[in-house]
Image (cartoon, rainbow, N blue to C red; front, top):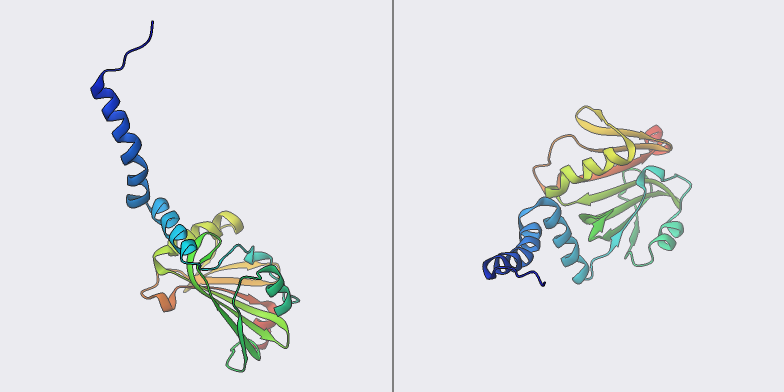
Length: 178
């Protein structure tokens, strides 16, 4: 005997199948983040994945260009607080968190600091991701995570503007000089 579903049950089930994913994409934080990532990808924005806690000051601009060939790095001399050269690139996402830009501070050709400007609405997901990967931060005016070749820093509170929403990796050489 073939089971018969009442028509109302079928309609409600179909409605749930259609509305459920829409609700998740529009009304949940994870769904909104994934929607933003998809839109950034469709707009052609560069998305990179980088284990920032494993950066080394021996890395060069060439190493970064080789790791991320789609990254549109623009480099210039001077103006870098942690080196003699500054390279910047627009960014769509960093480790699956919507972002705006990536900056490399180089001394000669070697990496001394890295800055990721993320979208301030994603401060909590960025912090949670770092806590899952590295552990609990040291809390002060800024959150800090000691890593093998330096320190990671980000604002302790949700930034008031996008200009303040940044994650920094400072090499031990950059901290010693400054």
